[in-house]
Image (cartoon, rainbow, N blue to C red; front, side):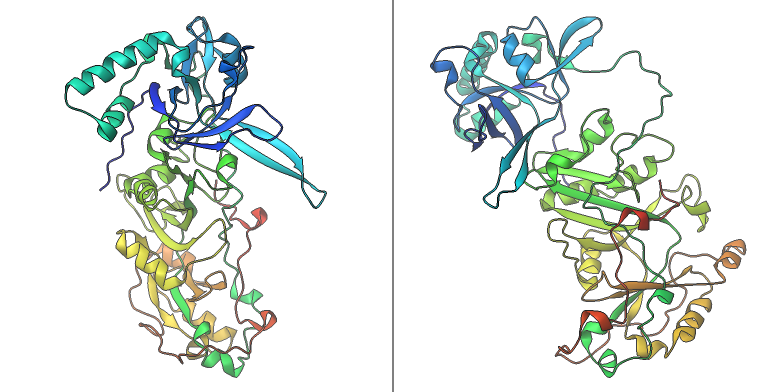
Length: 473
């Protein structure tokens, strides 16, 4: 579908793409962008004016990628290494430095006389090209050869970025040694912008009946009716590097190579979460692998990378490792991910249900089975009527109703016979027959403006952590 270059080039010569902060206020640090990576650069440690000159856009630098291990005897200013890289690490008994993600935090007083915290993230380590003569000579030689071969302009620069100079300094990829292979890996908590997926039961919507007249005609009260799946809550997200949430994503410490290869892009990071955990550490573990690899097999990481926006997609994971395998998946069969909602993590805006369904269809993703678009008064006049509808289902756990224009407002009606349905082996993901209205509801074109927050005939889901399902990781 899409091709992404994931080859590891630990040491490359690149140009500074942009200077985001000439000086971070109150410090001697610059914040730079280098081909999509954000880097903090310490300006000068030697008492010469030339060395204290800050970097500018277009300057050539040697860029060390994350997880590069630099030998302590490499011809680089040791003070600069100590201050900028910070992490000392041994490889096979040899002293050196490991390049890690780190964040510089600046606390400052706002005009409103309150303290604010600003974070600057660094995703690599840079040194001016002229400060490493061995790499500078090799670079000039390679550039001259490329020019002789007819390359120039952007094509020449693109070619030069593909040359790895790690062998010049003896830089290798850092790997831990001597750790217990059976040591449990603990995944970090899901990022704060990942909302809980708990859907309230209709019993908590006490103001649903009796209906006011507007509930029978206003198009804003059209609901999407879907099958309630007996699965596990799953979230996938993409956060761009410029997002306010990017510095707060789980660190790369102990992150698996499987994750980095498939989730780290120049324009942002892709992630997969269970109800409570970010699956970034144990992507091959027995309890979490099916989350991560299901998303990858559906090309969700590449789809969202190409989209290039801050986005969160939520849904249900179903398969033989989930919820006692209610749908009798075979062990060799892949798990399925059914999309149920999409929202923007920065604004909290939820896409309407039709837009979500169209997105799923466009990218060949499965959507939770849609039974139709309905208005509640057309289905039932009281709670008993709704419950009777769910209990008549012969293959499903129940029904979920999401307001078409405001999907946060939703509720569920569980099938009280679900356990018997599972025991009899009749559980199915797709509905056998539609319930209620099978197609879109044709309502008035003008919404009813006379409504208030207190009289909605629906319940809103809550983002708090204690509302997340208990059966998830």
